[in-house]
Length: 238
Ligand code: VGL
Ligand code: ZN
Image (cartoon, rainbow, N blue to C red; front, side, top):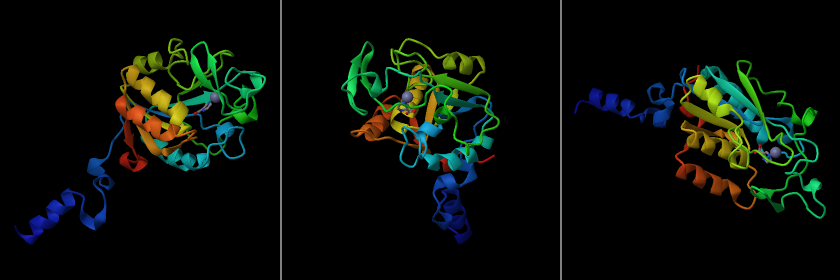
């Protein structure tokens, strides 16, 4: 083979400069009209100083802000609980945050009071910049039931309406980002699969809570459901 040909094929394989294939535009994902970015729960409650702060949670904000211009469709979610919500440890006597209890729909992790409707704690992070987002969907607003997923509540029956919205808009693929990887992001991505969408989680645009190994478990469960794990560099910038 001539040297010129060798150089050319090395470039085609993305070997030049030691860069991975995905650093080359040809290998990148271009989200089109049928794709939506879902920004899960980037709210003060889950950011530094919030009532249920996720370690490194603030680090997802610049990543999401940079991804947003590449998407024609963006949905933002907010965890939006009543005071005295069934997912709050303070609702039960003798229960502490991060313990569990049994509710009608199964085991519920009990959390510190967080994301109470209308509070500053429940507001979207001030530095989050997704001005083109078309829908804000709130979840977890039924007092007796939690909703990690943006698609359905914890009884796995009550719909939020998101699947219908996305289908009516012709969306086929969702890219999930935000907080927390092992709870609301994972449940949203898995329920997207259940509702018939292709689903990707953009890992560096998420951070996890990792309660008793929940982060590794969530990645395993997501893989089993056909959720694909990618990085923000895999998306073609706008
Ligand atoms: C979440 C715990 C409780 C989340 C919401 O957004 O991942 N986690 N409520
Ligand atoms: Zn919550």
